[in-house]
Length: 408
Image (cartoon, rainbow, N blue to C red; front, side, top):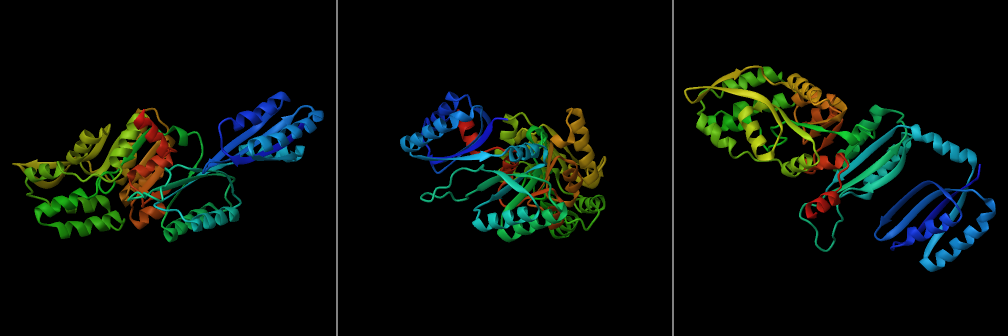
């Protein structure tokens, strides 16, 4: 085997620097085994793992590097790599890979200290760190800053359950969202996003607001809260709440439907998903008129929700057809994925209540959004701090991607 060397190049970033270094390597017929580059605040760090076919070329190569250090104002470190060390590195390519996403308004160093310590305890290694959010101005700060850092992690955790619990604990203490997902081909090929509606796509619980119009808000809201926490059976609670709406005029329902308060980030998320070719669906324990309204203003592809029965211009207080509960949501999602010839691992499910857990657990990426504690603790991922469009970070979309697309 020819000699293997690791080159570490560091210095002020400038056009042509990488070209100059690789030009020297090309003169000696060097084979590039791996290469990686990062630029932070106009400072470049470049790593190149090379195979030098002719050992006699080493002295000339080092001399040219020395001259480049002076001409380009950079530092080049050349480290020989033993054959067994190189082969051990090659052997790691089959290891499990995971993406850990950190999201928040501000991310403090204490977050990284705790996370890196946890990963070390779990026998995991950070392979790459990337910033997905835009740069932060200190002179003209934005009213609602957003930060997102993505860590690419290599290895199998010693205790997955303990890892999840400790990540949840760090998230709560540090006031950041932490999402852990497998870095596999399905993560890069999501194609369907299924949303809950109430308190997910819109900033209210529809049945509570209809109850307000009917003058029975307190009674209905108490039942809703217990149902969302998983303390009550959804079908029974739904039937009981709906009965309290008997006699509510349809004109009031229609007027409310025209003024649905969208969740912050909902329009940006769905418009971006549509541009990327995703299909979107609502699977809701709420009501069809509101789902249809969101379909109209957001461009949602599919809507599944409960029908409101009426007679003589007023609600009867009875359900019409099958009630869409948690299990129904999961089965509708699975059926839709099958109709679209998708693996469930290509599906994202987003919701906030206990009745969303079945579909959140079945989906390849299940997200509890601003969810009740029992849902947040049970879901694969949880988002609570940023808007709904923070989901874009979990599929690897950078802020700069959207800015480039919008100006193009």
